[in-house]
Amino acid sequence: MIYGVDSFSFHDILTIAGNPKAAQLNEQSRKQILASQENVQKIVSSNRTVYGINTGFGPLCDVKISEEETALLQHNLIISHAVGVGKMIDKEYSKIMMIAKVHALSRGFSGVTLQVIERLILMLEKDIIPCVPEQGSVGASGDLAPLAHMVLPLLGLGQVWENDKPTATAEVLQKHDLQPLKLGPKEGLGLINGTQFILAHAIKGLEKMEYLLDLADLTAAMSLEAYRGSASPFKKELHEIRPFAGSKTVAARMLKFLENSENLKAHEFCDRVQDPYSFRCVPQVHGASRNAYEHLKELAETELNSVTDNPIVLSAEETISGGNFHGQLMALPIDYAALAAAELGNISDRRSYLLLEGKFGLPRLLAESSGLNSGFMIPQYTSAALVSENKSLCFPASADSIPTSLGQEDHVSMGSISGRKLNRILDNLVHILAVELMFAAQGLEFRRPAKCSDIIEENYRIIRSKVAKLEDDRLIGEDMLAIAEMIQNRQFVVSGS
Image (cartoon, rainbow, N blue to C red; front, side, top):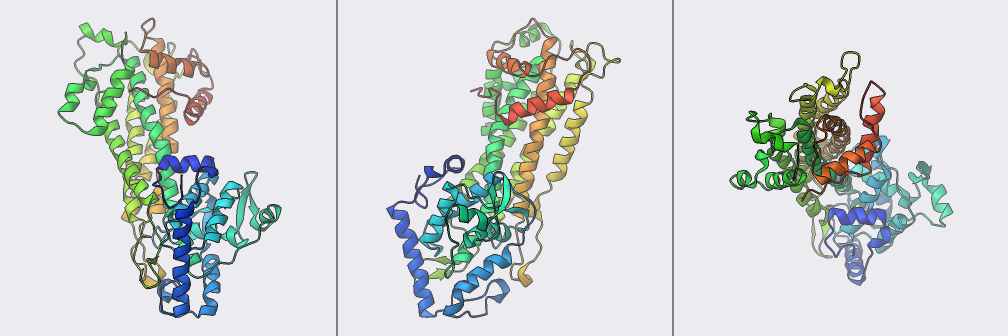
């Protein structure tokens, strides 16, 4: 993969994060970078006024900066903007920010030097990853504070990760025999103008959501087996006359998961007409969430392969001061995906509740001696609490805007908050689905000797490898955490089609 030349997918970024040498600069990308660098130098030498090259920033754009002071201007920009607060984002998020920034700068429209870009790549390869606080970006004029923290180590400042601990950059650079860099004209602005913090959260959200969408289908199928529900709502003919892509995908997957089920044969002579919506409408609800995921994926990959700083340097004679740094294009689809992820948990909790009701041959609370034992009563409380928390996180951050920069930046996206909330919702969803999987496996115990499809039997065995059938009350909180860990390690077989 070639920075600044190839079109990257979000999977490509995750691959590079795992193996930084999977991407590199080639002759074409180097030419692009050097040409852009040369254009900036010509602008400086010409003494023509261009925002961010020889002017102040934001409301100070009318302050002219001399040629001798342009380097100091960029240094001051970084140290004055590194004002993030809160806990540090996970190291992988910082890696993704760096990779996405290198890719954008390598397009050759930002005026950042080859030396700086090569240093970012070297830092990735040597695992010198900046510590970036999670709060402080309003998601317009770029993710200024987070990106400034990402850039500080180039100057020998700030902190980087070493042995999973924040460590002074100067100390780590010395170990690697590296000297701090001095930024030239336009470089500081090119480095911190952009949406890479928002984008990193979108990419990690896509990675998590891709698996959890598949797992939610499997979980619903296991619960349907335990409930002895009907597979009729998943028939192809139904979804061909309302042909949403997500619904069609989920319906086909459900039929695959339920193939040759002995439990579902019980419907051949039963008088149950319809299942509750949380079973019957799985294709429509899960499918809508899939549509939101696909929307975010499309827009995130567009953003990933875009130039998002300002101004854009087209030539020594032409620069454009615009708004490519504005995060609204990402904030809205991230908020949409957050709602979609929360709904996966909402409907999962409803299915968990139905399995506890004691209907259609299942004991109340999925325990044969309920009363003396509480059975699975309380894990559903945990699920309900997480579902409610996710609902509170669904308020769209992009619906808010607070003017900044003395009114120069009078509409902002808050997309950085959108990205953080999406990932919190997805982390909660892991535990909600873990509860449903635990209930579904217990429910299957009361359907024996009837067999499920091969894939559900395989996933049942995966659960039972760590979590035994509940006979009497025990520390089932540990069982929930064990299943959640299996989800996080992607141990479940979720390919149904």
